[in-house]
Image (tube, rainbow, N blue to C red; front, side):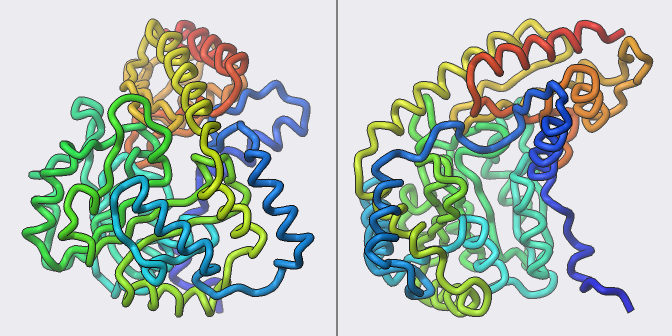
Length: 399
């Protein structure tokens, strides 16, 4: 008798977390390692948010809350959707979960039956396929190449829909590519979805405030008629530098919110009451720090783009949002390092880069896009300059 359930064979450990843990382990060993792999802002949580958490502790707000979140935070989330996107969600159409990842777990586990399909444009965040799979569904991947700006076209979405399609999952802006869909980009996708009334939509907007050019839109904002079959998912991790607080939220139709609430009641129950108090302060307090953070990210993006521009074998799409670059290293593949390592694929490239130069990035295959790698510029400029200099040295040494 095996210890683990068969469903665990459908998934793998998160590779982005694995890289972060490997970097930490190497640093503990005294290795000179530059970690530019982690999807975490290097800014501190704003002081007024931390102060709100401290006040909640002192006031004794340390008890259970409603499973779906405190009434105050659910109202604040509804106000946020109205203020930022013009979407009218009532508090009862909102759920608070332990990170946006749990929102998605809840939605998929509550709705997917065996062989139901979920369409996922690729490159995609590493957890989407595994969450669908562990819920019993089948991920259906639609490649979106760098030559198309890493964006899904309406005709490709149409071609992917079958009689078994239950969900369409969209990340905007996208991890790992930084591609951001505007209202104009989303319009053809909405038109396709209107023709398929059985297909639900999960839009992951966690990076919505980290955008540099045109403002990214969200599905229901573009097409309100899709509201009754859309989960609009977001959280405080990225825009408010609150990754460790683990607060995600979503707006969705009441029947689905109730199903997710039922599931959450038998898993984590409510998320941290202190975290909810902090999130309430984040959503209702000053937001000037967000624009300051985005300006810093923009400057870092431009710095890294400039430094990688003349690196042989590397080409890079200019991201419109997030804090990631997703360069292609296809021009380096098939070449050999000075110590005789042949770079046959993206995994060999990033592994050898770490071993030879001490630069940690994430290989593209984990995002369903081989021959690329993800570089996070959510770190200081000195580290980024040195990391890019080492990447340049590594690529110039190949023959």
